[in-house]
Length: 80
Image (cartoon, rainbow, N blue to C red):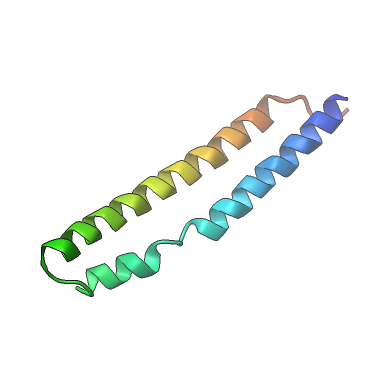
C-alpha cells in the first residue's frame, strides 16, 4: 500500500511540475508589451504594475506548489 501511495504522490508531483512549467511564462507576453510601453498614461502604468505583480504572484505560487509536492514526496517511504 505504501508503494501505491508513493506512486500516486510521484504522479501528482510530476503533474504539478508539468503544470508549473506550462504556466510559468503565461504572463510574459503582457509584461513584455508593458515594458515596451504598449499602453501609456495612468491606466497603462497601473495595468503594467498589476500585470507584473500578478506574474510574480503566479510564479511564487507555482514554485510553492512544486516545492510542497516534492517535500511531501520526500517524506514517503521508498519502494520496498
